[in-house]
Length: 272
Length: 266
Image (cartoon, rainbow over the protein chains, first blue to last red):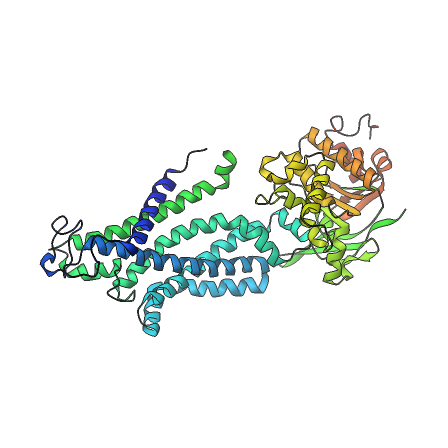
C-alpha cells in the first residue's frame, strides 16, 4: 500500500468532519438552533454554549452545525446537477465535433461570462429566495466549468487508439462515450466535483449573505455573517464562527480535490 | 487464389490551412487470400492513411476499397457494420490501443459487438480463453487488466481482439515497431503461424524492411503518398528497380539482427 497524499488525508478528514456535523445536526445539536434565550444574548464562547450565543440568544455552535447541512446540501446538490449537465455537454461536444461542438462551446462561453452573483440576483427576483434559487443559480454557474474540463479530457480519449478499436467493433459515438470515454475521464470529473463543491459552499454563503439563500429561520452560514455585521466589535465570535466554518469547509474540499488529483495523476500511477 | 483486398486509385487529401496535402495519391494494390503484403515507406509516406482507409475509419477523397467483393464506401452504414467483422486491425502502440479501464476479456471480446449472433456468457468466455491461448497467453489472463502486461503481451491481446470475429483480412499498422527486437520476432512468428493456420490475409504496414523480409510474400514501397514499387518481396528486396527502394534498403541498419541475413549487396 503506497502512501496517500497528505492533502488527501487532511482534506478527507475535514470533509468527513463537515459531512458528519451536517448529518448529526439532523438528529442532534447541543441546543435547538432556532430556540431564543434572551438571557444569553451576545454572550461569548464558554459563557453560553461552546461558541456563545447570538443577538437573540440562540446557541451559535448549534447554528453552525445546522448551517453545515444547509451549506453542504445546497452546494453538493448544485455541483452534482451542474456537473452532470456540464459533463454531458462536454462529452457530447467532444464526440460530435464540428458544428455541434462549436455551438455548444459558444453557448457555454456565454454562460461562463455571466457574473454568477448577478444571475443569482436575477434568479432570486424571478423565483424568490430559497434553497431552490441557490441551487439553480450555483448549478448554472457550475455547468460551463464541467463542460470545459470534460470536453478537454474527452478529446484526449477520443485521440487514443482504443477508441479506433471500438469503432472497428462498430460502436457509435454514444456507446464509445459511455463505455470508453466516461470511465477514462471520471477521475478528473470527481476531482473537480470536490473543488467545485468548495466553491459552491462559498457561493451559497454569498447568496445567503445577500438574502437570496434559504429562508429564515433555516440556519445558514451566510446569513449568520449578515446578521452579525452590526455586532462585529462587541461580539466578534458571531462573525468568526461562521467565517471560520466557511473557510475550513472550503479548504477541506479543496485539499480533498488536490489530494484526489495527486492520487489519480497518471504520472504518479505509472511510477508506483 | 481468391482476392481479399483490392484498393483502386485511392486518394486522400487533408485540409491544411488554405491549401491541402495529398497524403495518398492514386494508390492501387491487391491482396490474395493467405498472403502477407508489406507496405513500407518512411514516416509521412501515407502508410497509416492507407491503413485507416482500408479499415473504413476514414473516407477517401477518391477511389475504392473492395474487401471480399464489397466496395466499403458504397455500402450503407448498416452493411458496412456487418462487413467489419471480416477485417480487423492491430495498432502500433500496444499501450494506447487497449482501454486501461477494461479487463482483457472484455477488450478481446469487443469486436463481437459486430455480430448479433455472437455467443454470450460462458460460451463467450470460452471463446476468449481459447483465443488468448492461441496467441500465447493464459485463459486466466481474461480477468486481468492491461497495465499488468508487458508491451509484447499487450500486442498479443490486441491480436486476439482482432481475430475474435474470424476476419479474412488483418491490417497491422506498425504492429511490431514499438516492441524490442526479441519480442518483435515473437509477434512476427505469431502472425505467420496465424496466417498458416487460419488462412488470413495480412496487410503489414511498417517502416522496417527487415520485418518485410521476415514475413511478407509481397511488398509495396510508398513514397510521398504514391506507390513507387510493388512485387514479390524477394524480388523487390534483391533487385529493387527504384532508387527510392534502394535507398530504403541501404538505410536499414538491423538486417543482421532481425530478418534477412546474407543480403546481396545493393
